[in-house]
Image (tube, rainbow, N blue to C red; front, side, top):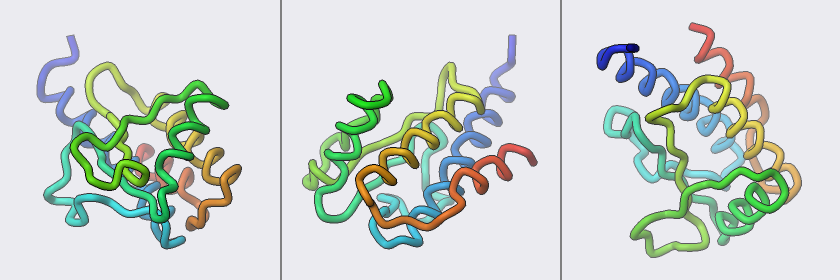
Length: 128
């Protein structure tokens, strides 16, 4: 098997790729991490929020148009803004890039303000 230490390393690598993409998207002002300090973030799931209730439209678009289900914001007061991305278990770099590509597509379709180059940032992280 892969071995537990390698599993943990893979989860960390995938998490950092997602964070790299989200850091770029956050430059547009609409996307925010729920946990701002990367040293306190989970390598299992990344919790995010979009301003002005854009989370629900993003989740609806990715699910209905792309077949990509984003997690809801569990226990969050801002139901329409919050969502989460899982990156543990049977997940690999190809899946992460597909998730990020789907999110980029949805944000473009919904005209959500975002920084440019998120997929490149994630790819560069995975390439190291």
